[in-house]
Amino acid sequence: MRHFTRIADLDVTGVAAILDEALAWKKHPPGAHLAGKLLGMVFFNPSLRTRASFEAAMLRGGGNAIVLEVGSGVWKLEDRKGAVMDGDRPEHIREAIPVLGRYVDALAVRTFGALQDDAADAADPVMHVFRELAGVPVISMESAREHPCQGLADLLTVRENFGDTRKLPVTLIWAPHIKPLPKAVPHSFLLTAAAAGCEVRIAHPPGFELHPEVLAEARLYASQSGGSVAVTHQQQAALAGSCVVYAKAWGPATKNAPGGEAAARVAAHKDWLITGKTLAMAAKDAIFLHCLPVRRNLEVADEVLDGPQSRVIDEAENRFHVQRVLLHKLMNGAVC
Ligand code: CP
Figure (cartoon, rainbow, N blue to C red):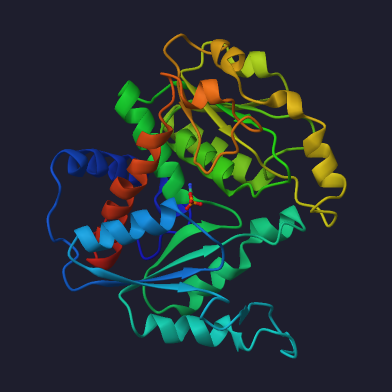
């Protein structure tokens, strides 16, 4: 594994290997496995969990991290190919990325999509340039297309609660928001759960489809892992007997956002708020997951987040555990 910016960098066997190792290290921490290593973290967008968990993994492993927030004490960066740079962005990523790569042992990057066009976001152009030009391993802290560390943390949480994930029914369910949000998190839960052999059910209102290439990729992993992927517009059909209820707001990206047609479409589905009644449609011992941050009582009701089935804090903790393993693989050249 040279880079880790997508589940395809691991594949089905690699996902299982990372989860096995993360579970083992959670019980028996590895000590100073990152001594002398330096991670450069580049944020084009804000974060709480991702930033804190990556910094914690580096520092607890005996290494260190440099955090750069683009446009905040760091030059605003242009990313458009062929742009005439006569605006407010004085440096291009084609110089910034290789320069940063000369200072550190690996680069981590968070770069959301523009949310103007689903196809453009799914092409993930900024992440591709990082992979091309960094000169060191690149790890995704969420891009326009995927949030693979989140997907691994999600599945680690599922493994901790249910053991074997093969044929486990899990439901990814759309939730309302004040605006269309990126699809990276639902994409990554779908891909990782399919790679882990789960029976993945996806429920969303019409018009909120996940990217067809990602669905096809998930179905390929499911065919290799013994899992399955099904999509419905019916909450009840997706939730019946399910062991995991994973709620997330997403898309669609359109040129009208924010406040335009896409926002109106999101607002039209406020009744998809995840409540105790929604959770009761799933299996009795189902767990509730959400990547966080979550808008209480807009996306998910208090009774769910504060209830006994919620595992959202464990899920956030597990970001640290999977990233520690990934950083080890990438920075110490360990093959997975
Ligand atoms: N889940 C997640 O990535 O959280 P942050 O956006 O706070 O990093």
